[in-house]
Image (cartoon, rainbow, N blue to C red; front, top):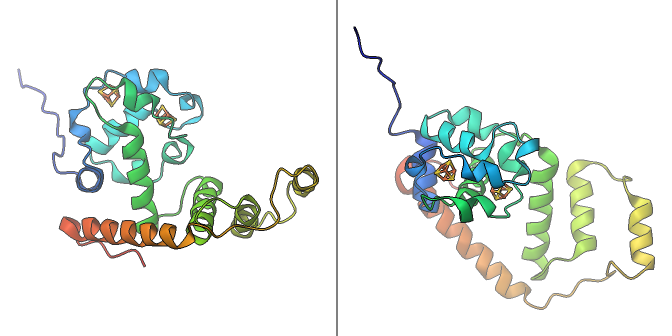
Length: 198
Ligand code: SF4
Ligand code: SF4
């Protein structure tokens, strides 16, 4: 009788990039499923958190990079807290999102990607989140210019949205963003030869 041989690539490109950029080793996962059991949004994901970690180990990079799961993850860190192997699954999700954007893969849930980009753009510009500016940025990116305008007007009338931004802390925020970008570029260049994020 011939023994079955399971061919598992041990040097998957994405798994290595995740390890390099976040320090998280997905190969520590032993598929107990605790992460998925506690995940509040796993019902909406195309692959549960432990399936996504496993696919990363197996070198199924395209599947992971094109999954909805990474965009639907709410970064609540329940999975990270529950993992008996101390894998920071939420951190892996964040890292994969960064890699998707850097490799210019089209985000599978574009609205969520647009939300992240609009929110980060606002924080970088103002030093904190300026909601109205973020909403305008989001609408520009999603081209849903008139969606929820009634709700927006009601929030403005009730004083829930500020009309004018504050710029206190903007300079510090910009320095932090520039430093993070430099570090990300250095790490990304590290061993993969991927291009810098411009
Ligand atoms: S961080 Fe993301 S994957 Fe983990 S439990 Fe929360 S929503 Fe689910
Ligand atoms: S909780 Fe940790 S060890 Fe268990 S399946 Fe999830 S990532 Fe793997």
